[in-house]
Amino acid sequence: MKSGRAVGAARTWSQQLQDRFHITLDSDLAAWFDEELWRQLGNGEFANAVSPETLLKPAPEPVWPPLMPPNFLPLVGSHSGDWLCLRLADGDAEGSGYDICHWYHGGGDWLPWGETLAEALLFDQLLPSLPASDQRHAIPSPMEVGRSNNSGGDAWHEWMVRCLPDSASHLAANRCWESGSRDWLDPLLQSNVCGAAVRCQLVIEALGNELAKRLKPADANRMGIPWNSIMKWCFDLRTLPHDILTRLKEAGLATEDAADPGQQDWAKIETLCEQAHLVSPELAWPAELLGYCRWQRGDQATGADALRASIRCSVFTDQSVRLRTHWATSGADGLAKFGAHWLTQTSADDVGSSDSFSRNHANALPASVEIADYLACLTNREGGSVRNGVTTFLQSQSQRFAAEGNAKDAVRCLYAAGWDLGAEPMSLYAELLNQLIEATRSADWLSHETFAQMHRDCFRKRYGV
Image (cartoon, rainbow, N blue to C red; front, side, top):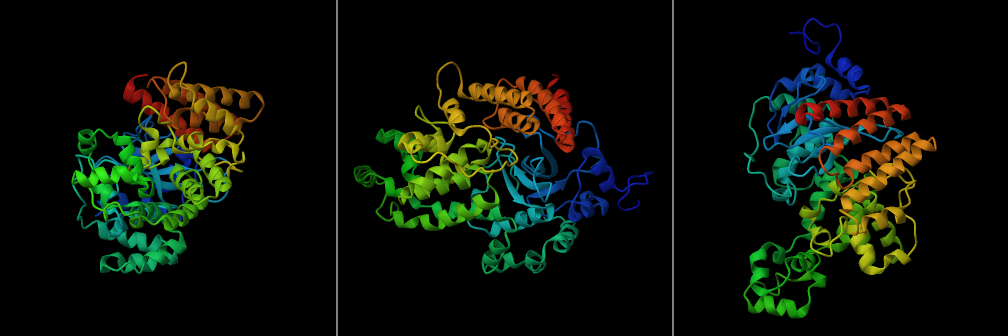
C-alpha cells in the first residue's frame, strides 16, 4: 500500500477529494487523508473515521439529509451516531473555507469544535476533563457506550500534536488535561483553540444550580406548577418567586442553599458569551445569553441588539436543552427562538432597531433580510404552522434576491428556508435542494453546489424522491 494514494492512482487522496468537492484542504486534513490515519480507530468518543473511498462516492452513506445542513460533510463518527463534520463557510467568507462541527444525530443540532480536524479531535480528548462534561449531549443516546481505548489512537494523537497550532500543541503533547489541574484552560481560551465548544461547557457550568438538578416534572405536576415555569426559574434563580420557594421548601423539594442565586455566575456567563459571539456570530446561544445578560443588568439597547442578532441564527445552534433556555420555546406561549420570545415579552422592539449582523455568515439569515419582517413571520400563529410560514417567506425572499441579481443572498435564504427552523413535510427538502443547486450555480459557489448535489443524491438514495 502506498500511503496517501489510492490503489492504481497517481493522485493523492487529498488531491482527489479537493477535485471532487472543489475545496482546498488545510495541511492537517490533507495529511489525515494522505497518511491514511482514517484506516485506524481513534481512542475518544469520536473514533470511526470515514474513508476517502466513501467520500468520493456520489452518495456517501454517512451523509444524513436533510437533518445535516447541505454544507456539511461527515469525517469522523462517534459510537452513538454523531459526527464531526466539515462545514463550508459562507461563499464570500475570507480566510478558512471551513470549520469542523459536532453534529448531533438526535435532532440535528450542531456546534463548532474547532477550525481544523486536529482542533476538533483535541476537544474530544479534553471534554471529559472540562466542566459539565456529563452534559455534553442534550439527551444521552441509548447507543452511548463510552470512549474507545484503541491503540490506533496513538497515531491520531501524534498527528494531532503535529498539526495543532503552537498554542495548543504543547497541551496536547503532554496530555495536560490528565493531570487533574485546569491550569491549561485559560491559555487554551486565550488562543481560541476550540473556542466556542470550550466556552459552551463553561457557560453550562456557570448556569448550574442544585435546584435544577433536584426538581423533576413529576414534582411540578404534584404541586400543580407548570413545568415550563420551573424551567424558567431554574434557568435564572433570581426570578424564582418567594412564594414558590416557600412551597418547594414545605414540600421537601428545595432548600435555601439549593435555590441560592449566588450559585450562578452571570458576569462570567456574559463575558464568555460575548467572546463566543465575536468568534462565532452564526451561533444562537452566545447571542441569546449575551442579550439576556445585558438586558437583566439594565443595558437594554445592546441587549436588544444581541437578541436580534440571535434571531438570525438557526435554532439548531441554540443548545437550548443543555443551556436550559428551552422554557422560552416550549408551551402555549413559547416561540421558536429565545430571542424572539424575549423581545416580544419585554417590548424590546422599541429599543433600537439594529443588530450585529453587518456581514453574512454561513448557516444564518443574511443581513439583507429585514429582521422586523422575519420576526413578524416567526411570531405569526395564524394560517398554519410557523415553520411552514418561515420556509415560505424565505423561499420568496430567495426568489426576490435572484430576480434582483443578488444570487448570493438567494443562496443564503435557501439555506435558511430549510435549516433555520427546519421544513415540513420531509419531501419538501427534495425541492429545496434542487433550488439550492441552481442558486449556488448562479452564485458561482462551486463547492456549495457540489455539496448540495451530493446531499440531493443522498436524499434520493435514502428516501427514493
